[in-house]
Every structure is written in structure tokens, then in C-alpha cells.
Image (cartoon, rainbow, N blue to C red; front, side, top):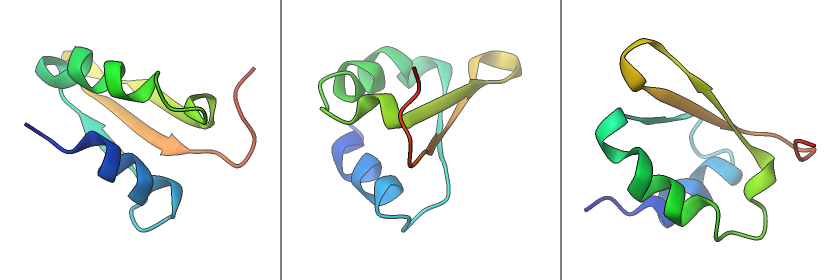
Length: 62
């Protein structure tokens, strides 16, 4: 199991530039992501094959 909470913290702290989530991991990852109070700051872009790449934004998505 991946430690998504730690990876999201690293992304927020700019320790990593982006976080790639494969299709098979998406539902588990999403469950962790939406429970965070800052989840609207994470922006994901879907790519071919179900891969989603997340970045952290200073301003939340509306």
C-alpha cells in the first residue's frame, strides 16, 4: 500500500513537483485525497491509459 498522505504532504511542501497515480491506484488515492481539508489545492490532469498527474496549487480550484 502506498502512503498517499505522505506523498500529498511532500507535494504540498514542494518537495516533489508532481504525483503520478495509475488507474489501478486511483480509487484508493482519491479516498485519501478528498478527506484532506486542502484537497481543492490538488489539481489532477488525466492522461491516456488512466494515469493522472497531480500538482499542488497555491489557490484552490473552484
